[in-house]
Image (cartoon, rainbow, N blue to C red; front, side, top):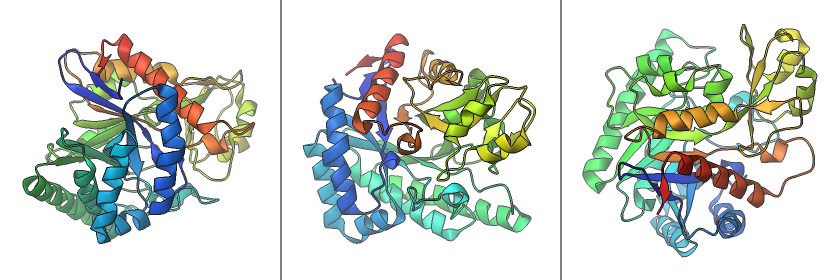
Length: 372
């Protein structure tokens, strides 16, 4: 068995877990996570080949590009460990496991030439890492910028950089025969919060290379209907399988245990929003409404009652994207990066990741996909 699955139409769907859950930001650390946690996940699943959605910090990506022997060595190491990479998470730039991340995860944004440079570098790396029998890779990236400070000048800089990244990806495809597609990831609080906004962004864009990455947690926090999000006709280059935290009306005090300082936890009710969970708990949202929180929680396990998760929304999204006569995306990345900040006793990370991947495999099997 592998993390490749056959859709009923005959096409291959790739399943992976995102390595941004690991704090490594240099090449020795990345090799350590591969031979450590990732290798144990593969053994727990009993799979011949484990899919990874690799996260490379600016520092690690720069080293791989500057030292071709390191890039070739990483490819060889992946093959020796029974792992493959067809997708990268290009959203965090660096410091994703710093003591405080919050708004810094959105920098540099797409108005900054450094975001363009970093993303094209990631595309070069991914083209080199793709297995020999795979010709298409994907990269997820931030939805342009955080919404505050958005100006006409910034919008113009973003437009120029998007033209440049599409041009660079086309040139890479011509040179290597590998198509790398970039997916902008709608997220609450950003310039592109929703899939309709993404549809407007991508109107007239190079749809062979630019599309969206749908993060199920983000869509659920924004109360977007799964079928509507999947039905806009957007190129969905990747699905990030993730669940948000949900509090029924009047139960919000139970969320206090999840108000932690590292990551930003945008919180939405059916009538309002706050940028972080602490603001909502301080009176920013009405307690008489259901809340959803941008806190990625395990796919396979519910939090202690009365809290729940948006797993039903994720199942609906999987069905909308993969339950039809043809898949609307072929790359699925399980992305729960918050294991180390979950309240309670520290989890066994490898067991948790393996359980999430197994849960996702079972959802896909119910849709008729078969493991290769």
